Length: 115
Image (cartoon, rainbow, N blue to C red; front, side, top):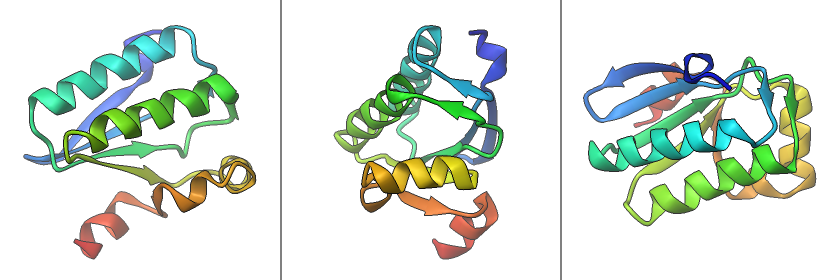
């Protein structure tokens, strides 16, 4: 998994948006996500937004990677926000009850206007 498959966009000085790749299957994506999380903690961000709009396939390792990022960021008072999951991904979040843990928005603009 190339880091280039994870596109980083700075929305504000303390909010980053990460566009995730089409396949989140753990493996090398986990090390890239860990690097993103450590970078976010180092920058003392307020929020890290994960844009799931491109995600077509996600397995338990991919979900675990997102949960681990959430836990690590929460310990550092950084919010992890999910943006624009497809119906398929949203259904998976509901089945696993992760929709009750994560804040989910239709767009980054929707999140920013809710601040």
